[in-house]
Image (cartoon, rainbow, N blue to C red; front, side, top):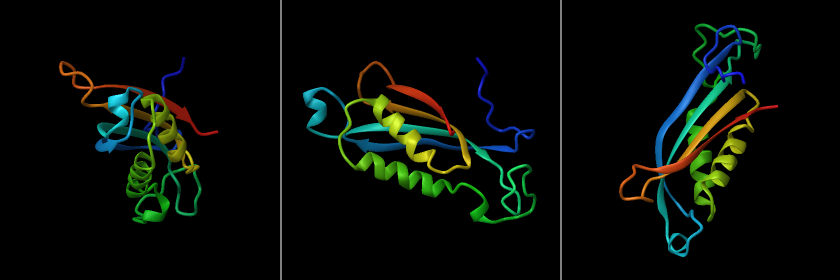
Length: 137
């Protein structure tokens, strides 16, 4: 199986990431989890197509300091916050898949790796969670 390559000059791909975003989520299958919220840590790794000055995805634009030509990480974080806030989800797997879907709505995102960790599940472990990787079609 081919290993995902994120930052790749030949493919005009840049690597963007959001690290250690900690949010309170309504998540879990057990009755005590359904009565409140718990902390989750979210990490996103995105392989993003480099857009040239005229939207040409074949080579990166050098020297064009323009937010419109890149994926805005603030937009991504706001989408994540909105999704986590929108209601209860039972499984970290479901949350991870939904986060991948919302990020892949941007066609410039080629590959996304999402890690969701519940931070307060076990007293003797830092976290428990899942990581998924999805590709844009």
